[in-house]
Image 1: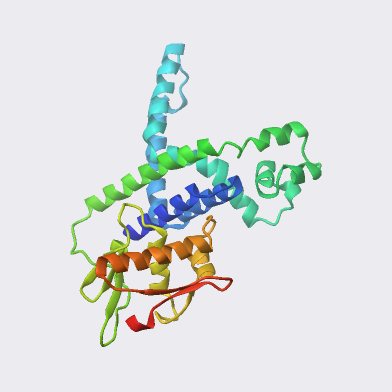
Image 2: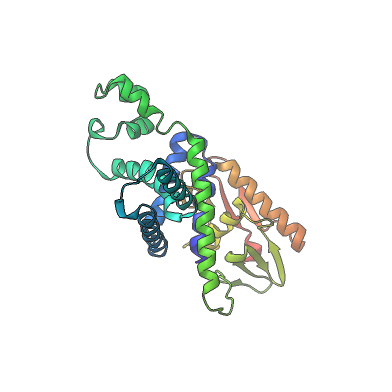
Length: 298
């Protein structure tokens, strides 16, 4: 469950950090795609949908017509209340208006002329969609606004994400307590140093020294740089290139080489201040920028 929360938070934060509408909505799609393909999360949404359907049917008496305007207003207000607090209802608009449309565009071979014009505009631009001469100017103008208001979708995502995390935490609290186990990557030890990285606590350990990488609630870029270094299949002696770190840990984001360079400097500063150990990382910039653990520690 902690891993799912970590992935959700990473995709959510990446979405909010996007600099363009296209990047934003593609990141929303990726966030939703994780929900749709994760068995636990999908089950939560299905159960919420069942609850929503049941409550909605109870309010509207299984389709029975209202006898007065007052009755219709009362039931309308009850529906608003359900949709304000039901997890599926909070997700539905993002799912239908963003995820389904982009998913169809990505997974079908239909030419752009046969796609939803709103998605064609998002992916290829208004001028391109106009030049296809498939839709009227009025239609394109209307569809242009489909993804134009990022703020409203961002607000919906923020509310839904918070509600989903609450639901996951509630599920965790219902489970019997088990002894806590830290998620520790393989320990490396030589005659002088023993190093490890406890990922779920964002804690770098060098001998008996503990260096906190995350000082606030949300893991910084430095945390994910260390994740990549310690997860590297080539071992801790390998050079971890900035481009590969960005591709692995920050897809569809605005992170660049400077972001990774600054994060590496941050790690060295924290190791120096908290453990009084110098130059834990060797940091290289330039076209083939990379970072590696100082061989003295390996």
